[in-house]
Image (cartoon, rainbow, N blue to C red; front, side, top):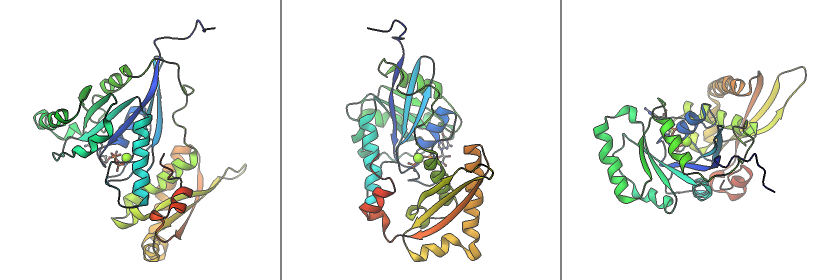
Length: 299
Ligand SMILES: Nc1nc2c(ncn2[C@@H]2O[C@H](COP(=O)(O)OP(=O)(O)OP(=O)(O)O)[C@@H](O)[C@H]2O)c(=O)[nH]1
Ligand SMILES: [Mg+2]
């Protein structure tokens, strides 16, 4: 029997945020949720997994999927990252294709992913350019693919986000919520802790280390009388990287620890002890067994 209380106008479903690296996908998911769940840095290829965030209102539940930036994969880790993009695109009811208003170079290959799904073109970083600069870019994309709407936004300044949400929700199927309404994500705390540490490594080092590192939280011990104790491994690919990561008398690693702890404490809402260990796993980014055990299963 049907429940008379079921709200037939309620909508729920998935929207995947996709686009090239660094266009602002993670900044956008955080802005839409009003809460930081996905790490953001100035470097491309920051996001490596599909990161799920849930926006619930009385009339709808919008499940947002942040994804890694679309690239031509060159090694195992990048291939797994691209599998998580295609997986999210397949899972989604609606796609939000994000482009960077400041980059005039068009990469139509990225459009292959959006075929056959209702897609909204979000022109991000609109705070950095004039309307006149944005139009030709949006137009060239619109000539190559079919977009339901084209919306200039600024994820950083919060511009036009209500309009974007409304455009997505309009295209979600009707149905009851898929998650409890007070849940914001589905990842375990360990995931966020590892991501925060990785964010600090991305910020502190230049080219090589960020892309060669993996962070694994190996233990998370909540204790009665004392602070929660967290052990994390930072895995890198070569011995030479170990010295750089640790720094003179351990100074670099100490900095990562201090910066990460501050953010982790804010995230968890409690003081913690954070212990970081550096490990070398030769060429882990190309080894299926390591990739699997580090959670790169294409999701
Ligand atoms: N000015 C401006 N900067 C932005 C905006 N959105 C994002 N950024 C900046 O762009 C950079 C990349 O942002 P991310 O959110 O990490 O980009 P991403 O698309 O998730 O990148 P990947 O995870 O590497 O694919 C950061 O320095 C952001 O602060 C925006 O609307 N305006
Ligand atoms: Mg990202």
